[in-house]
Length: 314
Image: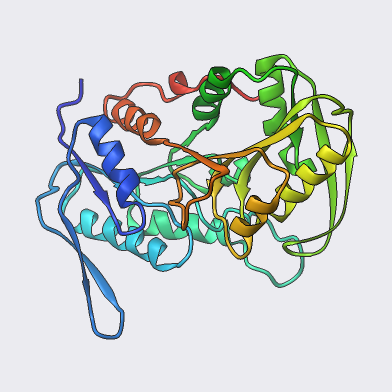
C-alpha cells in the first residue's frame, strides 16, 4: 500500500465529473481557485499544500482552449508546489483527431499537446478512448488508456437487446466495432462514407445485411452527428428493426442536437467525459467516474490498470 497522500484537482469544465470521481474514490476535491484579470487572463491558485503528494488533475480538453490552458497551468502550479507525482487525468483528449499530417502544411495537434503536457511537468497521462490509439506513442511518459467497453458492455447486457448486430459508421471505427461483436458473438456491418469536405458526407454505402436486426452503431466521438444520423437512416432503409448508437465522447457541436432528435436513432448512449450542453430525450448518459476512480486508486497503489477492462481488442 502506498501511503503518499493523494490530491484530486480539477478546473472549470470537468467539475461535475471530478466530484463524482472524488466521491467514488473517497477523497474531496482540493480547493483550487481560478483568479481572473480584467482582460480574461487567468491564474489557478491551489489553496492547500500538495508537497510530496500524488496529484491527479482531472480535466477534459474540449474547446474552448482555455480548458487545456487551465490543465497546463494547474500542472505547473502543482510542480512548483513540490508535488511528488503528477498525473493528468484527461477523460476526453482534445485535438486527438489531428494525429497525422494528412495534407501539406498542417499541424499535428495531438503531438503538440503531448509535448505541452510533458513540458509542463506531467509524469503520467490517464485518458479514455483516444481517437487514434497511436497517440500513446507521442508521449515518452506512461499513458493509461482506459477502455469504454467497461462502461457500455454492462449497460447493453442489462437492456438485453434481441437479434443484435453491431455497425461501424465508417471504416475507421471497424476495429472498435469488432470488439463489441466479438464480445456478444454477433456479426457486424460497415457504413462506408465518402466526404467532399469536413463535417459533410457526400455519400454512404452499407456493407452487410441488417434486415430485421436491432443495430448498434459504435464510435468514439460524436461531433455534428452527421455521420451517425446518416448511418442510422441508411441502416433503417435496409430493413433494420431499430438502430441505436454508443459514442464515448459527446462533443455535440453545431446542429448535433437537432439532428439527433430528428434522426432514426432510438437511443444515443454516451458518457460524461464531456458535459452535455443541453438535454435530449434520445440521449442516455453513463458515467465514467467509477472507472476513473478505480484507475486512480490502482495507479496510486501501483496496481494493474489492465485488470479494469472487460474486454481487449481483437
